Image (cartoon, rainbow, N blue to C red; front, side, top):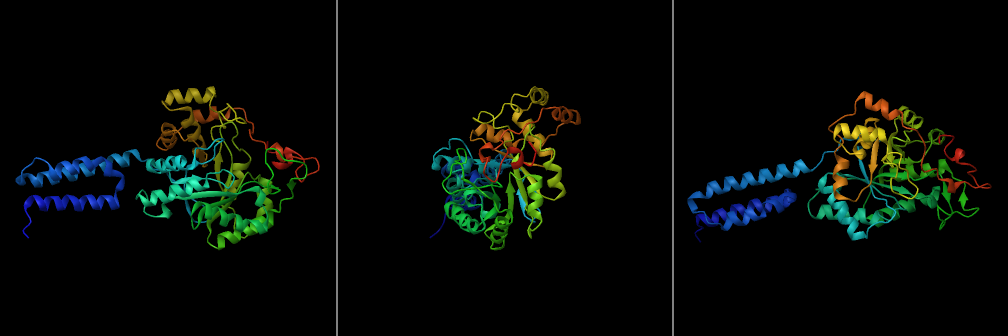
Length: 388
């Protein structure tokens, strides 16, 4: 069968289209109308070379547009040797969207550049994170699982040597993953199974075996179920206790940190120990029942934001990043999700940093519910070792 010039050209377009579908699926929606137009359009056969040139140029322009809208997040190297994106998307909320809706939100987050996702056994979002990973692989948004950094956390009902491995296996099963990039002990606390952290009865707070629990975390790492292990909400003193017997040092300590709680004691301690700090509640949990307006209504931040044509959130996040800390941001609003990524191509001045140091300091989430007169934690000061 003799193939005409027009048929040859259509085959070329089909080949390019299939190649893009496999290698660059994110630009398909931008070039599909042009594919149809050029394959079956009004141009004569003698203009097919010109058509092909224009078509390829449109592909290039579409790819440039995708790259422009996809923010690049710097990476840091943990003491475990693994790389982690310097900004993470938190997957906790007082009221989570339904699983399928949250999955779509997380896939969109990947489309605009997020690669680090932070969840926990108690958040109720592990399933959606796992589904988002699977969807991203299915549509070619990522080529392999290693392109993402997934964190989850051991809940405090399982803070015991014998319960850590089963808890991690359950998390992996829920998420449909073979491994995590980071697994954290959520709190240096243990409570009874079925107990409510925010309404604990007398006797429901149990002694926490810091060394036995960490040994089990190390075992999970050695089994390849998590690439790195770490802590959350640990004070300097509790980290020092853990390090006395640890064979694998924690890679991360994830703590409350923002301009109104700057972790002036903990941050230099963790840097000395080569433990990277991630900051949750970087905006002070603004609008949340237990949160604070100290960040988002700070006149200092408002003035800096105005002078730099930035949002208050961007100034707050940039400050955290400049301290060498990775903020864990949380917004499911598309505009704010994009804005939270736009903190890496500008800097605060020395004078602005000095102004931020003047902001009054107070820990917002004190975790008073763990304190019981006859329990293992008898005061908030004991829980935080005085750093409140």
